[in-house]
Length: 204
Figure 1 (spheres, one colour):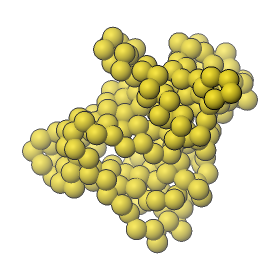
Figure 2 (cartoon, helix red, strand yellow; figure 1 turned 90 degrees about the vertical axis):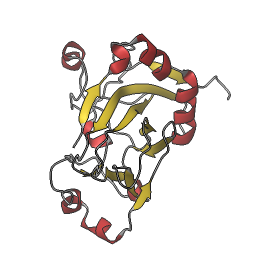
Figure 3 (tube, helix red, strand yellow; figure 1 turned 180 degrees about the horizontal axis):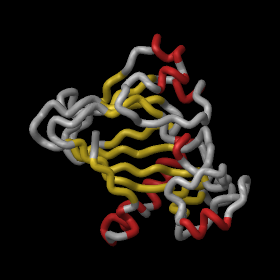
Figure 4 (tube, one colour; figure 1 turned 120 degrees about the vertical axis):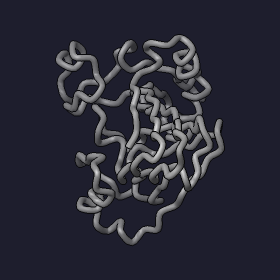
């Protein structure tokens, strides 16, 4: 489906400068309606030439916190088109979704085994020119079409965690030592693991 490269900000200074930009943090916080934003993880997603479709899924059930206000940024590095695998959404599904674990398997329809009522929702394609971005709630159902071209479709993403979110017991991308130091319900506030990039000033 795609080549995935996680946490590039930790190994590339230029990527860290971009991802840590507080303007991105403020944008995510404003859209999510929260006072502070931490980076959960960044990743590059490269759909290869003639690569398979990405199955319908939710983002937040994979992560180590459960929040209805989590948000994801998806930046098109190439034109994302109907032909090469742009994103598709099922609008409004974040209002009904739970935190039940899901996966991204080879079967496009697996998510509908959990949410059969969503089969009646019409999907919306979101073609994006290179350099543009979309943001979506971490519980909204989305997927991507197959790449039917002989060129890669490259994207850069960043998952954002509302400041004050608590550990739900899932390790996901947490460093091993930090993961084993946590108890379910503890606030995830280790700056090295989940850096705070934006916090609204008191009274704002």
